[in-house]
Image 1 (cartoon, rainbow, N blue to C red):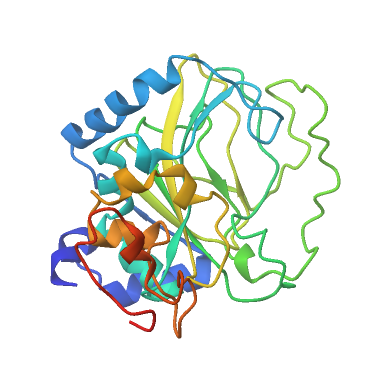
Image 2: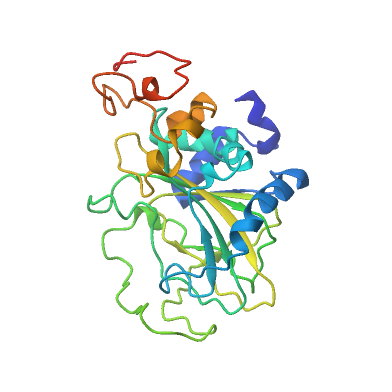
Length: 287
């Protein structure tokens, strides 16, 4: 934890955790140095160049999404392993937590506001309940009041099922950038400089804002889940085994080469890491 003190300033990790539990999100400004931001943008550039837009209003009809990022560059591996994000993920989800998803989201000018949603909504356990995820929002472009900064509803991770009426949103209709059928008086915009990090509990209601500016807005979001949960993105297929064998051990664990106690995830009675081509580490299924 000593290595993280530089991010906490005069506060403690415990005080940030209290805020995280109460509000459902915490913010750290200027975490990534410029060289790391440049490396992430450079790795994304060829994938964004194809300019593939979302398939519906949720993905974003004027947004680019790039998936399977751990197979697309070391910079994304470093981001998923960032100790600040992992500290909160492991604190909430346990040491056996995994990656549920890891993607980049680029909002182009004219993109409309997303519907409110949670990142652990696929966990079909009625609310209120403990969040089953931690999402990291790494800001690669300054987010502003007008370019689509992520919006959150503080404390909504503790709301009961159906406390927010989501039925007013019809994502089959093409909407104007100024149209907001789910405007909420308690919404907070995460206006942040590039290199900043927002961490949110999986049960926190949030959405991408509308981009009313003339420039793109880019973030990368690794999303962590408990070791017992099925991930949104099938990481074992997204990252080929030959590439996975070259990753740091913790990255291998995050994409599924790991055991959740007592022995969830074994392969043929053995630790899944033993299936990797180089087999540097040997484990039994209960380790």
